[in-house]
Image (cartoon, rainbow, N blue to C red; front, top):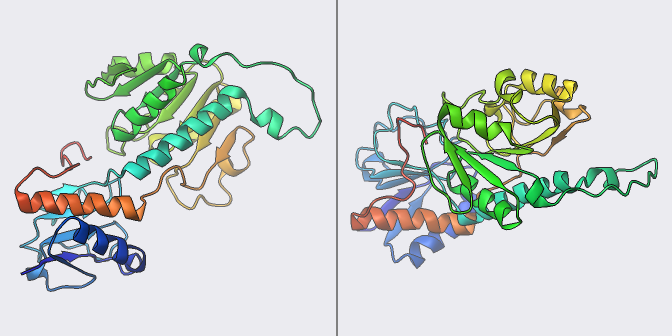
Length: 309
């Protein structure tokens, strides 16, 4: 009997039906992908927080819930979800994030804005320092943070990575814990935030930690909007403590039209485009996890419920 793979997201069904069906077939899986099914027959659930499915209690047969999103903060606390939960780590999503982070890091490092937007036709031949003279700090050393850090290190930026628990990433100076955080921030001419949203990371950039940054530091936040205390960041920008903030994620999205970020001269808003799940490659990740589940192998990217990611 074929496996039943439930895809309970009507709005996403037209986009995902073909690539997921193809990925399941390519993986040699005898599986039926369905937008609706009797809960008692469902073997796997492919999921995103936008799904109307919120009560997992009837799905007693399901072996795992496979998220299409990298962030799982909107589902990890669901008490009815007792089966394994896996987050999405999509190779193409990682590529997109690396491109966004490297692009904006180079933009600020080279001072491109003053040449691209130069209504006064000011001739300013000031050259930037070399990359090896511009320290970068990455907060978060998961798949995305490690990849971005290594890409910047390959361009000769000295990169410090910080995580809550000790990690080692080749090419990066790795720090951890509260003291490590303060040290990592103190050298960050460019700061990139790629932490998950958890109770321990919310407002990790507040008035105290922002004050640790070197004068004029640049902040890039493609991680989670709640990592930053918005009022504290605006105050630091107004005071010149922070030179610029390029922000891709926000507590409320779309960002309200009257939010101060839109008009602040030291803020760039990008509309949550730093990285996106790509259907073709992400579908293969889902299919591989189903293959692993059927083979009795460990799931990829299984969420630690205690840590929240």
